[in-house]
Every structure is written in C-alpha cells, then in structure tokens.
Length: 101
Image 1 (cartoon, rainbow, N blue to C red):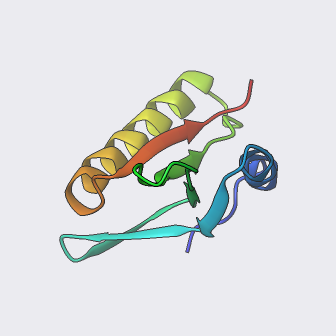
Image 2: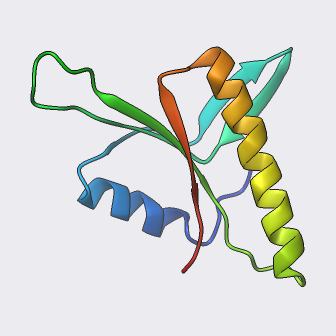
Image 3: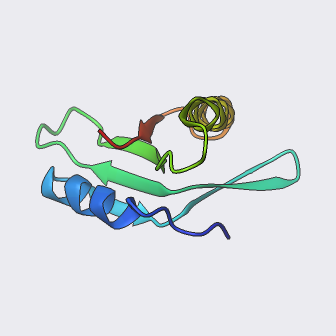
C-alpha cells in the first residue's frame, strides 16, 4: 500500500468540509490481475430523489521532487492510468488530481 502524501490529510479535510464522505482511503482498483491504489474515494449524496449520488476518486500529489516538470509528468501519467481503469471498472466515479497551489 502506498505511503500517504504530505497533503493527504488536508485534502481529506477539504473534501469533508465541502460535503463529501470519504468512503475509501485508499481506493483499491483491480484490473488485469493488478492492484492500483488511488489516494481517496469519496461520495456526496444529492437531496433530489431522482438524481444519483456523485462518486469521485482523488489522487493527491505534492511535487516535492527535484524537477517540478518531471513530477507533473508522473502525476498526469498516473492520473491517466487511473482514469482509464475507472472508465472500465467504475464508470460513474470521476477522477480528480489534487495538487498544491
């Protein structure tokens, strides 16, 4: 299981403050015999009975490496892998990439 990012707890608190319920920490995705771990899974229920709740997957990145450009390349690549796997396994879950300001 991957280590938590330094911004992990701050992202969790921000999501909770915005009305999200953290459902997975981390969110495990299994595809092609491999396990992947997105940092967070969350849901927010809507009030209207005819609408389904919203589900998201959040990957948290810190960009603390020697090269911010390389960190960005890795983060976008990781996000794209998660996006593709979610499209196959949980198409109703929307992926997000949480990055520092």
